[in-house]
Structure formats: structure tokens, C-alpha cells
Length: 409
Ligand code: ADP
Ligand code: ASP
Ligand code: MG
View: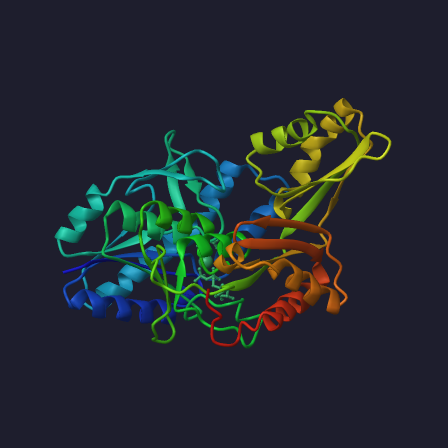
């Protein structure tokens, strides 16, 4: 008997019929005698619908109330899936994040899981029940409902698998695995049989939303192998796991893009020690994640300081930085949302020179201007004009021949 955690994303539970199809899938496995914990997302579009209603009422809604609101989407699907399982004569019980409880910190909208008390779930499993868990939500020490960031049901699933020491963690979604690029953007993208935690961390961090980055962090920390599968068709999917030294590694595993970033530039900053800290300190204190950072060479002892953030945090960042601009005697702070970040990810970069050059060449051949560049050991990212996102991703996918059988290192 195995303990299996399965997660079904928004499209997989997008209609009552889809929920019934998921129930059939779960029931088949449960009837074989496996213990099943099933994590579900809200029905597709529901989280956005809830956010939209709140925005119609308030341009700066309370973060606490936002979490109370958006967590309801998952409460609907756990109940419906449990009912669909009852219809199939499968004993099932639903749990919200706070009934388990999944304890988080109190950073609303992007809370981190601190501990999971697995006792009640284990008791239900021993009683022979399928346990249906609401993804994306938790509760803070002071009893406020929290959510784990967009796409956070992936993290709930991996965290439950770690807490329960599950034998398998399977993420069911609307694609049949992790691809060399978003298959909706690049027609000839190729499914990867296997990726390492390290590669998946970079792919997710650079925009491959098929897995939320925090879920991959969790999986890597607690060594929970994940299999990404389609809930619409059967197939081997993609295994995300630790690095097997005997396994050949692809030179490049994928091309990703992010088009929800924004750029903040502080112009005319006096070029002296402490500038980066004065600017980024208040931003980080407000729990705003900064991605790329560039400080231009100073002219007349003045410099431009630029960084990128999620575009939802743009307004707040500018508000936080207006007093800083005055304090530093800088010229102004401006925001720009017309950009996209494109990344090439691959462990081959460690040992092969020339991947950056190949990237810049492919972009220049399409006449795409690079604004900022950043690199890590296995990733190169650039920002470009947002209107060229798809063109850039396709050009790079072709330039590195990712549709062909893998180049190994
Ligand atoms: P779910 O609702 O099941 O969590 P998501 O929409 O969050 O599903 O993630 C699945 C989507 O991720 C796919 O539909 C696909 O368009 C997108 N995606 C982006 N990059 C990749 C990639 N490299 N491989 C597979 N899917 C990707
Ligand atoms: N429903 C949440 C979202 O849309 C969480 C998830 O789907 O994983 O972001
Ligand atoms: Mg998702």
C-alpha cells in the first residue's frame, strides 16, 4: 500500500464534469488500496474572478480580506470533489488549510508554510478515507487565513507529501509534462522525461508556471520527487527529482518568459556607498521581491539605479520610493511595464562557453534590443520590449534546436 499525494490544477477541476472525471481517476487508485491525499485548486478563472470583484470595490484592498476572499475558490472544489467521490461509493472527507492545520507566516498573499500537523489527515487515511485538501491556503499563528501566492496549490501538494512522507507526489495539470518551452507559445516544444530540482527551480523562477517555484524549493529541500502529468490524457509525464550523476544532462533544458514584470528606475542618484541599500531596503521590508538589478555607470557622479519586480507591486514600490528619492536628493522615480524577461536555462552552461553569445546573436538577428542582462550558474536572462516576447522565445528555441533530440553534456 502506498501513500499518494495528487494535485489537480484549475483546468483539471474547471467544470462539474471535470471534477467527476478527477473523482473517477482518484477512485480507481483508491480502490487498488492506496492511501490518497488529493489537493485541488479553485476552478479555472475563479481566483481571477474573485480578485476582479475586490478590485471593483477597492483599488487597495486589505491583504487580509483578499486572502479570506480568494481562499474560497478552493473551498468550493474540495466539497464538490468529495461529493463526486461519495457518488462513486468512495469514502472521502474534505479539509480546508485551517482545518488541517497548515500553519504559515502572516505575509498575506505570499505566505510561507511553517508547519503542517498531519495527525488529523493520517487519522482519516487510517479510517480508509480519501482526504481532499484545499490548495493555496493556510492559517497564521494569529488565526488569519493566508494564501501561498498564485499557483500555490502546487506548494500545498508538495508540502503535504513531505509532511506525510508520501511515496509519490503527482501534479496533474493541462499539459502532459514539463516542456522545453511553454507549449502554448512554441508549437514544436518537446516534453522532457526528467529534470533535476535545480533546473526546475530555475525554469519555474524564470516563468515556467507549470510548477510554482516554492513547490520546487520545498521538493528539493525535503527530497520529494514530483511527477508532472496531464489529467486529460495518460502518459509518462516528467519526473522532477535529484540529480543522478550517471544521467546525461541536456545542454539546455528550456526557454522561458515572464511578461508580468515591471521595471523601476531611479534617475540621477548621487553615486556613493549605501545607495543600493537605501533604495532596496524599504522595498524588501515591504516583502516585495526584487528580481534583476542594474546600476549604470555614473555620469557627473550621478547614476541611474534600475530593478525589476512583479508588476502588481509597481504602484506600491513607487510610493515607497518617492520619499527615498527626496532623501537621496535623486531626480525622480519612474516605472515601466512594457518589458518581458526571457531566459535560457541549462546545466550545460557550467561547462560550455558561448551559450550567452548564441542567445544574443539569435535575438539580434530578429532585431530585438536587449535592455538588461543577468546570469546565474545555469541561467541567462535578458529583458526586452514586451511585444517581442513570443518572437524571442521561438527564435531561441530554434537557435538552440530544442525541438531535436537532446544535446548532452
Ligand atoms: P494548473 O492550473 O494545473 O496549476 P498552470 O496553468 O498553473 O496549471 O500550469 C500549466 C501551464 O503552464 C500550461 O498550460 C502551460 O501553458 C504553462 N507552461 C509554461 N511553461 C511551461 C513549460 N516549460 N512546460 C509546460 N508547461 C508550461
Ligand atoms: N487558485 C490559485 C491560483 O489561481 C492557486 C492555484 O491554482 O494553484 O493561483
Ligand atoms: Mg499552477
